[in-house]
Image (cartoon, rainbow, N blue to C red; front, side, top):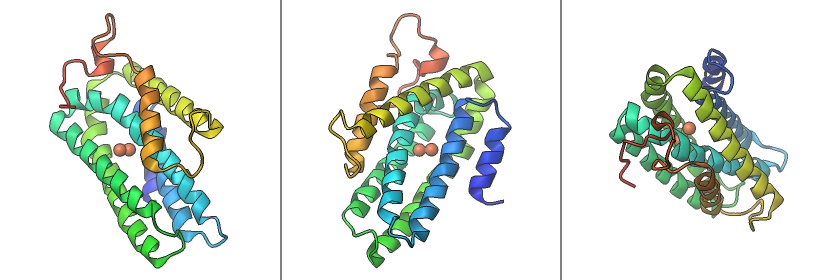
Length: 209
Ligand SMILES: [Fe+2]
Ligand SMILES: [Fe+2]
């Protein structure tokens, strides 16, 4: 069983729509896209790379908005902050890749390094963050978090694809990520908002942002 298959198998053991199931499925899709970019022989490498950039933008924005505040309260602030740092490094790696012709050997070399880093990052999330949420949050809370993640990601993707927020297929990753974060800022209730369930917001944990 390869890593994507293992992630899909673990997702299938959880209730459909649970935050952790949704993120495991996305990790598997990200691995699939890495393989498609690497193996593209039909002139579609640019297209697969663009799909990967779009998925990573909504995936990381969603994790930062929905997962991290709860990680901070369950696995701890140090774990949450370490993952945010890895995501910042990934953003820099993508920015460097975006400057290279996708069919060049330089791209292939940098892309292989990037895949390794993203794979390590996904494993850190799966083994340092997800178990803490699964043991310390109810299935109902995880399903509600999953709904919020998907709602924000779908809205961000739809707006990016429609181009109505000024984005297009070739927009840099930094702009895609910033846009997806803005969408989540609209969706995600302030931790200070009256009546918001602290289990959903990580209201008592300071991520230092
Ligand atoms: Fe992540
Ligand atoms: Fe992730």
